[in-house]
Length: 191
Image (tube, rainbow, N blue to C red):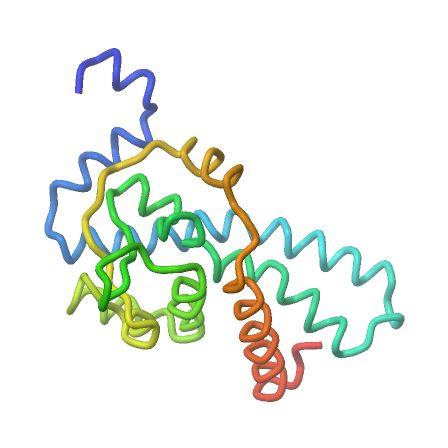
């Protein structure tokens, strides 16, 4: 990179480019950690806002409403790879999720399903060290992670503008609803 490119891209992208030259296993786990960090930066404030609203309305909420409110920031997390099967971290580090059978970008439902394994995230990191192409969620969703062209963060906005309603979105809502309801049965204090 020339000095002018470095200045226009920013120090974060420059540092990520340096990281990309290390061991692919470590690089993939760093991508997972960066994904998790970015998503936490997005969903924690959203969760706090929802918590404040829930506190304001107090006892007017029932368990189903609590599950619904809790699921909003988690839906954001589970759909981090929604746009062209690339999260922000994957764009920066040069990765994409593909369908194992077709070798085409994974669809939105596959990306959602592969992220449902957040409840075993430490195991996902260990699996990512062993197999940088596939983690537990990838085996469930029949996907894998491949190297792809690195992209700037602003590509997320242009992709977001081009989103069109698809049948997969209904599947995501239904599976998500069952998932969160199931979690509420496993962890009864989630209301």
